[in-house]
Length: 168
Image (cartoon, rainbow, N blue to C red; front, top):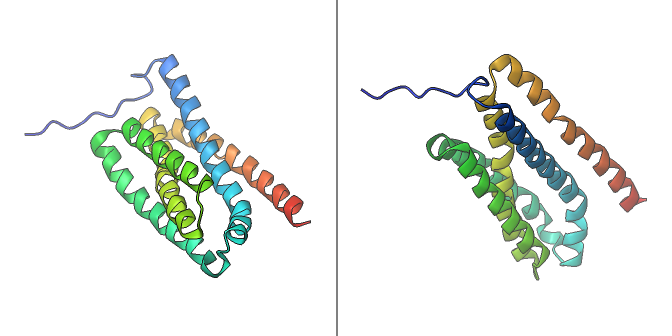
């Protein structure tokens, strides 16, 4: 008979592990939202410079679908292989896609590179929330999830101001 897996609780983790885990989660979550917000501002200019305006909708829809698929796959694989491993894989995909986006010579290669980056990004945010769920009991977890959304709000304000600076 298989033995039930016991979820580690806050008491099982040392204070140092919790601090390092929270710092890592907050940094990853903040970078994820920064990437999401800045790409919304940069994509139209990228499309214009690469003469890809006729295919601009593909730059939004294909990476969005790939990110949604990655969310499902990485969530399942994180249950099997562990959150840390899948978080590192998703960070690697996002970094690879970002580098490929920066050096894309054509609009089609930009779409492919953004799709790779979106696969990593689509997995990062849910994995951060899952890692918080592994670290804390439900009552404590809700406080940290609320605090985790502060970077999202900050980067939304940054994007709104950046959009005004670019447009006007």
